[in-house]
Image 1 (cartoon, rainbow, N blue to C red):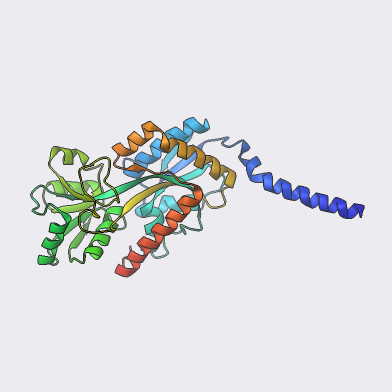
Image 2: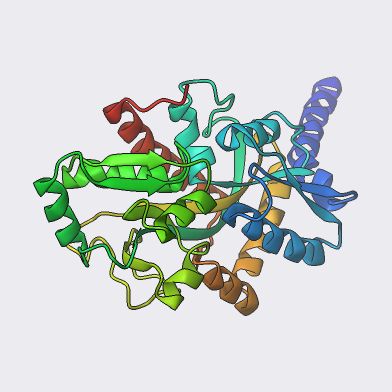
Length: 327
């Protein structure tokens, strides 16, 4: 009986120690530099948000947080690197809808990661709408007028976007499908050449995020017809949404969030989530996010996981329906 009791006690003690392991593991965290991977070049929307988060996390955690731009292949290279990194809380990802919820299906199994299995979601940071932006000379002033013109001229209207698989490109595809119009989508290598051709009236309209165009919009050299968010954006409060413009329920926003490799200890994920939510709720950060054309978002890790599942289901369905692929 004594030996049996001792054995049971040892089992119970081992179980208790295992239960405490994640918390104990996180007690000294962080003890060295944290790398926040951005899967795009410097200067874009993801990079900007990452640098905001990195600076504030550095203050909150009293540790160095560096931003590492690992760009290439539509964001899959940097995202894949984090998916396969050591799950110890020292390699994080600033991901968004394109890299997490669109690329895995668009690259037809070649992205190298599963958005549901290969990451530990930490929390959402922001959402950013895409806008339908026009040259001032473009006749239609509303979404309804644009659709009417496209239907009268099937296959003749060109819509500019950034590269295949980006938020602008996918929003254009979703719009075409939902509106039932035949228009040519012209993907460019980046946002800058899209805006240049739009300013030069080489293309009449484009789908793109607002920050690169906001200066020209305010100067009157470009015009926004509508935004893809469910509510009007704080950056352009007088601009209607697609829902308000005769397309009920149409929404196509980019969600940005912080992720770690799968199997990262829960205690570390929870710690980072708590700090992230404080950061995103801070007045100065809200102001910065609004300035960049976005709206702040907070969530639990589970809430972000559900958001990834919902967004991946939505966009992979469109990819399959339209037969989209990146070769």
